[in-house]
Image (cartoon, rainbow, N blue to C red; front, side, top):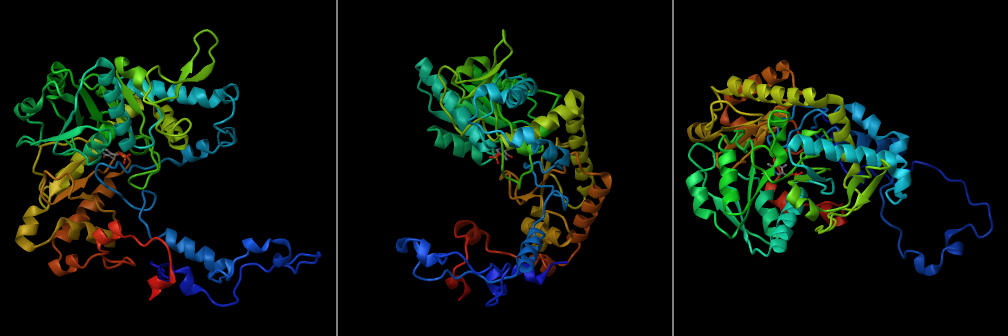
Length: 488
Ligand SMILES: *Cc1c(COP(=O)(O)O)cnc(C)c1O
């Protein structure tokens, strides 16, 4: 049940004279604020704050907290974001006093336990990627991309090569060109092949001595494994370029194949996606990067190292490091949750994660094939991209209508309108942590929605406190704080 009170502001609930606590009169001399606080620090007017009881405040925020959907409350098949269940055990472990009482400015000798965890984390990420050198610094996937592109830039500068171009398929995540542009490269977007894979002839046209990096996620954003990735990587290497693997889709291939084995030179992880850092689609995150040995000296530091003789852990900046990209040792809170996840599962468990993620996605895809066709690929990896263009043409029902209506039935929507190569895209990633019963219920719900009348769908959602905000205005001109003018 939605609580009407939750949609009111604290200012609406305010009543003059209400208060949460009553303080005793000051009984010491000079106890009045005007006597002890210098005049220049006293405000001329009393701030207009809402007046409420403690219960008013607690109820307001508790009710507000129930208005959002989350992995802990609803099925959340948001494609590309890997909204898998976040085990609560990791929360408890990450909050142990021995961990939370540390301060990053303590001397290294007193941080040996934490450094051993981070060292092991670097090691495991190197193993999983097949790329030997890891920096835990970046705090998100996008920042990992940016940091790795700075590494590429430093590497080419060091070699005396002037390479200006970063190439990516048109199905690339928006952060890929954004990171490339921010790192000072020119962006070149490929026209993808008709089958949804990289068009090798098209790629060849753009490869030359000005090519710095080819960026790709594998499986790609259509949820398809690029089978010719080794050949693609070889072509990039032949012109002296580097291959960047966007690791956001690692959930499909853990323990099955590795970016380093299929030709990648650099990659980022999204620890918050693949390794269960709790995240609201985007963050908080950790985006460690892994690179080949010849790029290690350019990595952002510090890197955790271990002295072979004494076994002591220390912090080192790589010789030609591009510098820091985040304070201290990276987003340790999220890295820890990833670490506990990896240690809990082990190598076999990790492979099972991907096998189940792929199985769940294919099961859901098969269940939906009659209502939501998938234009590319016969089988998918951990996610699939359906198209609503047929129902849009026939009945004027859009991908957004379907996504919004799902909210009424208690499901978070899949990703819509991405990737752009599929018209009216609906991109679903169920993840391995969902049961068959949940997938069946979701499929049944979508089938029901497809049979509803168009008008109901255009005006959905009907059960949420806000129905359809103006997306553009909400993104560009969000009103994030109360002011008396908002009320007018
Ligand atoms: C999520 C995602 C990113 C960006 O990662 P953030 O951690 O959100 O910055 C990059 N590429 C792909 C394919 C993604 O799904």
